[in-house]
Image (tube, rainbow, N blue to C red; front, side):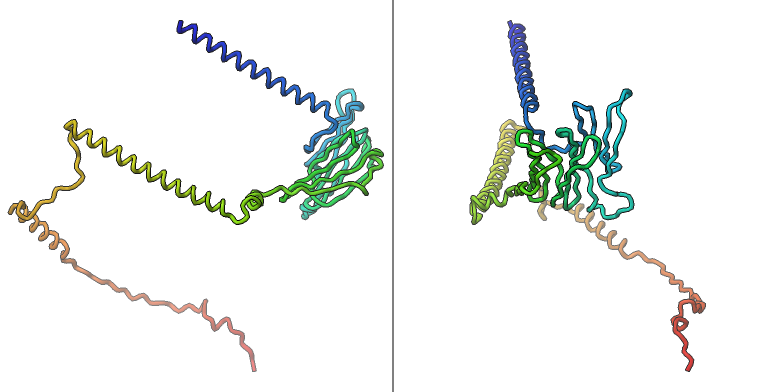
Length: 310
């Protein structure tokens, strides 16, 4: 009977784990389907992009600071174009060097984003590598996304305060982008201090929470110490009731009447020997040797003076 119960519990556990795995897989499939049917790609930096029709590949080469275009051949892929983003060799102003951040292929156009510490630019190229459009703007951006339905190219970057978002109108195609009416905004992330100040402008709540926490900690510590002392006292009392020897911590002091004459003699002998050891006779001999110092003018200051003839 006991073995049957264990077997039932094991079967129920396996069924629960299996159903949990099936549900997780369904959710993952739903997410993947939503991602496939979505009209835009996420704002994530991409280092590699492929055109499904022409099998053209655009990738970022961080070592050379270039965008490279690869075309399909019989034996694999061949590099057909190398686009230099910014010159790096011989430069020491690393903060001003534009480096590629993300690349993608939209509607037979290669789009890549490059930025430095203070500014960024996005360029539109044909699949063969010919530049068509360029848009420069302030702020360091790191990723972009294209919405197929609205024909808007969104560019985003983060800073110490929040995020910078730029939108470029590409309704007329990537060869004729409209930058004049492109909206841009900055999102400032709310700080915890601002949230606390909004709900507690004078800081009374924060002070009460801090003081309550300190006093509660002190009360808990005192209760723990009291409980520990009571438990030790009860253990000691139980040992005393059972007749077990209890070690007393207080030392036993002898009075003058209980000290014998032999103990007085031993104490006197020890004091005498201690005092005699402190006054041992020692023969002190001081030896003083006179060393003749030979004069050496190498550091004489008179040789550093300039002699001027009158």
